[in-house]
Length: 282
Figure 1 (cartoon, rainbow, N blue to C red):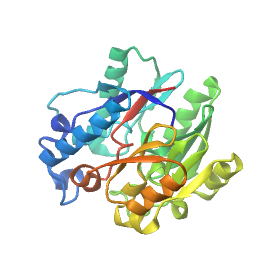
Figure 2 (cartoon, rainbow, N blue to C red):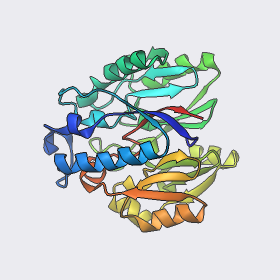
Figure 3 (cartoon, one colour):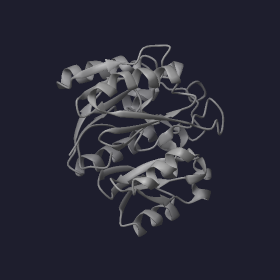
Figure 4 (tube, rainbow, N blue to C red):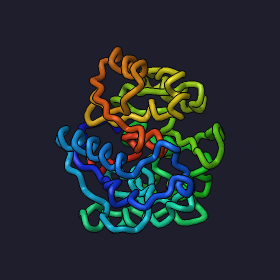
């Protein structure tokens, strides 16, 4: 999850969010569609400058505001993509957009998670190429995890599930990736108090060094201080405004680039990882 990013699926916030109503989508008062579009363009420029090829999901005027957060509706493995099933009702049309994009891109589709199964990409963390950790919470259920395991086990991939706390309620969901962001194969940024204990023990047993993000910044940002995107090992993009968390990553040998994201990430509860679906890392 931290190898050099070569190909990534994104959606412009200009098309996705142009008609978005903050109350309907559970966005904060700081949401501003025009300002969010400017901030998304800055993130896009930073990703392109890293050398990654950006594939655009769609530019349709379809009203699917959350589809800008392309990380969640699909999962990419070494053998192809899995089309997921969204736990948030307003997002249930998004997986079909991802399937159409993969067909267009020539990426094999391994299978789909079917309702009532639910899996969102934010609950999926690759520990290594053959080990996938999945958080079971308000957006990912046991049926979805079972289906995902049935799809991936024949490919030699072991799926491990971990219960997540409710934290701030069903509307403001806690994904597994809300509390961990890989920075390199052997390094991850975490908020340890919300990590499932068994997952924490797996990470430690595998020699993965855990960098603690600043707890006050985590709470103040509703977890967005921890949501960082590696474009290469120890090269990360983060939301501006969380200097202590950035300093912790820098002390661990990371280079941290930031962008202003109050109207896009903070208001809409999704960071740079959420805004990207990596398709190819090398």
